[in-house]
Length: 247
Length: 296
Image 1 (cartoon, each protein chain N blue to C red):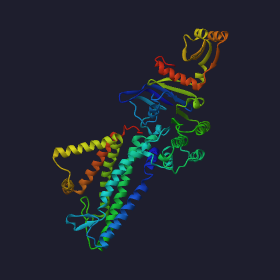
Image 2: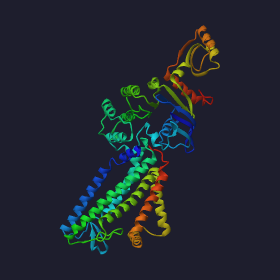
Image 3: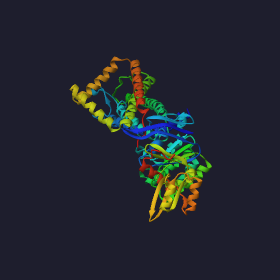
Image 4: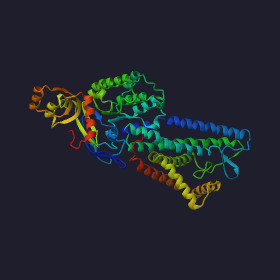
């Protein structure tokens, strides 16, 4: 137990700083984009648009930045922290357990911050004259309570973190070969299905995502996200349990 | 304390260690010697659980060490830092080490930083090779790990710093006895610190013995070739120099009382081989002869 505590402390040493810097930048961007869009009644909207652009959400647009942060976070955790921890004699099992707890912590913190920002945005929009975008697939900011929104976001972020954790593990084990493999698979899929990579493809993927959420209810989505996280963490452990230190 | 049984390791098709059996005792300083690529670093990586073995056992106090948090808490291996962390500042790396090692001595770390005059605000990658080595040495000393292993601990250090390292190591070892394993190529400088040496050769432990015993059974004989040949015929000759009719021969093995008598009566000069020379001769001979009979 003592060793797990020490590894958790080791892993989370820079957490406050990295989360603080990330959200600091995001808040500044949110604030500036709101001011620019609303105060100057700009034709350019710096936020997430619903169909036709009649409803917007500045906070909803944070999802792409969060997605990028989470992907980098998972890769760095293994590229830097895992290599150092292993060289200090930490066991793979302890590191992995601690990484899952760390991911849960990050998911909850991000859920609380993003959920809280949605709440603040709701009050802010009342005086702005813009129509607020409220439907986000996994929650609706006008009908769902804040705890549900935070929970939805946290579970969603955990699922994303589990994917990023798996990517980090695979990147550590296979290095550049992973990305060559990803590229080859991507090209094979495109060639075999005859789908060209275009805006249409992205829209099709986006529509598939929306269909997914329209078919399943919130409870099913939670369960699916948790199952996805469990699968990703299990596969990740399979690959990391026999990883050797790299130069 | 550490017991290695039938340990095997290969990288792809290339075998590095084959059926290694080894016992490491508590509170001793070991020298791990051998030529380049003989598997010294691999052996240390395996003992510290950083590399996976193919087969065999490595136990600490009877418990398998691999993925054993309890056992790993007692082991510290100091070697070159992973490339991926070289962007980190020295003070961050030291702080992270202080979190992981359960017996970390913060005061001693501060003392060593002053002693080595290390700038901890710099990034690892901005340090010279010698200063990077010093960061590792500080971690090794301050970890106070029961088993501390140094892989090439003097890489890039100048003579003064190397001397400081040897001095600190002995001072600290006296105050805080522990098991220390040093893998190095600078045999001549560290030979006198070792209590026991392990020489790896041809994928195996070719020799493991106490330094005092090694000293006792290694001799230089100097005298006329024909006279010396009489007493060295059935001995392990590890070194030979010829100056006209005079030979200087290095012998590894025991002499009987009769043989000693013959040496004295025939004016053959006899002396012990200095340790550094002995290790060099032994490793050179192992390479030449592939030592299938072993030196043990």
